[in-house]
Amino acid sequence: MRIQESAENYLEAILMIYQRTGHVRSIDIANELSFSKPSVSVAMKNLRTNGYITMDQDGSISLTPKGMEIAQKVYERHTLISSWLEHLGVPPEIAAEDACRMEHVISQESFQALKAHVRSQNAVGEAKN
Image (tube, rainbow, N blue to C red; front, side, top):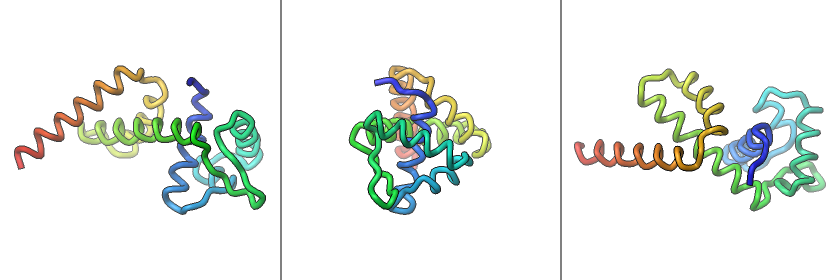
């Protein structure tokens, strides 16, 4: 399942906002991503049409199982790549920006290899402590 990078960013933002606040509305997404409300409205319509989100009567947005799967995948990539870059000495704000770009283009194979490497390094570090 391949969707556009912008859609992945919206789905990830919805997940992150929900984890922080327990609810998501279009204005929250606009504020999170620094996008205009009309741009977010168009994106939400597209995500809803494609079955990635639902929106109830009061404008609350929820991820569908299909949307949640993508959001979690992108968020996992973002957090792992960002923390790995920080571990390598990259300043947090640059690590986050770079991770945001890398999370969309890294292959599944490369990500799994990176994930396994990070886990093995964490296990070695824990064993030393």
